[in-house]
Length: 118
Image 1 (cartoon, rainbow, N blue to C red):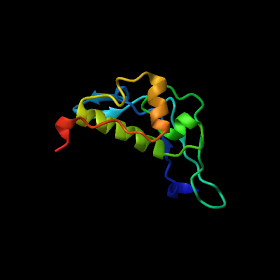
Image 2: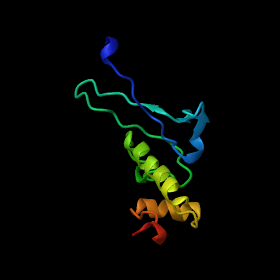
Image 3: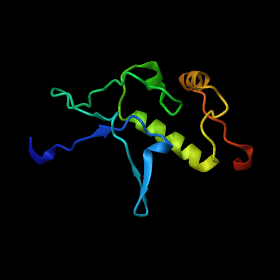
Image 4: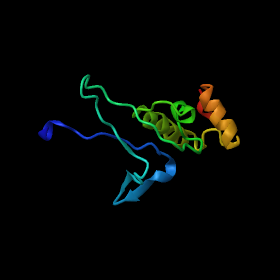
């Protein structure tokens, strides 16, 4: 298909520990869980994918539900990165992993500290 095809991936494991500082820049690292996003030949729409093991508390509801996933799971995880940068806290840091995952599945968001809300 030539050069008109632009490869796309979902990292599927974005957390603060996946960034490295190299030559004055932070770079995303560790692509061992990435999924290449393919397109349906008939519709041209991106095909969903699955990742079979989703531990931790930085993941999206789709990942904890083990349903079809798209590149949007990385957007959700980047939201957690921004939360960490803005609050200097981990999402649901006082909760056990299972409790944090249940909160994510129920649509609960981490609290913004009152010192930041004005």
